[in-house]
Amino acid sequence: MTPTTASIAGAPAAGRARLRGERRWTFVIPLLAVLGVTSVYPTVYSIYMSFFDWDWGHRFNFIGIDNYTTLLTSERFWNAMINTAVFTVGAVGVELLLGLGVALVVNRLGFGAGIVRTLLLVPLMVSGIVTAIIWKIMMDPTLGIIDYVLRTLGLPTPAFLGDPSTALASMVLIDTWWQTAFVFIVLSAGLRALPVEPFEAAEVDGAGAFARFRYVTLPLLRPIILTVLMFRTIDCMKVFAIIFGTTGGGPLTSTESIQILAYRAAFKTQQMSMSMTMMVVFSALIFVIVALYMRVGEREAVQ
Image (cartoon, rainbow, N blue to C red; front, side, top):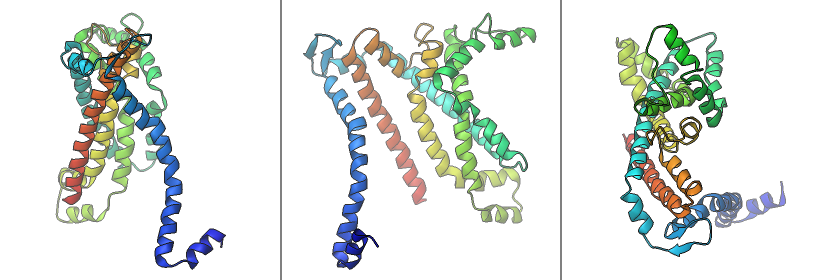
């Protein structure tokens, strides 16, 4: 027994509780310090800088809420918000349906299920910018394999990345290939952890496969689905790499997301304060979305 353990064991109950609390704080304090440096300080600093006009150089003027009024009345900002929302809804919806479908199929496999799971995780091993470059080459109208296959089959060959009407849908396609594996692996683990008793009872009662899925699988899997939706919604709203590596926000501004617009403001036009203002507004929006997800999760837990 170490001296610390012996001192705790020999102390009164109240003293032991206090000593245990102090020992817990010794583990929590480093974590709080790291979070303060990496998260709290940048957030507070960004809020502070959003009230100034700073151009990375000598101009550093206090302008109050002018950045916010300019931003919230900017047509380009709202266009980026709409692009981000459309991309998020499309990507999260498709990935959830595909991931759940594949998880249901793979979990029914016997031999080879582990190999299939491993192969399906390959896209997650690729970084976002590499994924963007690969798909940019594949969708190239002259050298791309996708256009070649479509022409060979006698099918129309749309300008995936060069047409404003198809560019954003192409971003959803790329993200679906890249991130569906995340949805699959989480839901697959959730399916494997479900209790078997409700399924056996439903089968005894004569419930078919679809009825078991609707009335047993989905209700039991709902908390996990909600968690996946929350993480994928946050991740899709922060989309940057696949857009930056393929279209750069174009053609025109058809794929310009909030992250791309903030990047351009900071590093292309040297409007650093405006870029920070965008991030403050964007972070507040994500906070509201997370709060809504958490609220729904609490209601699910109560039910």
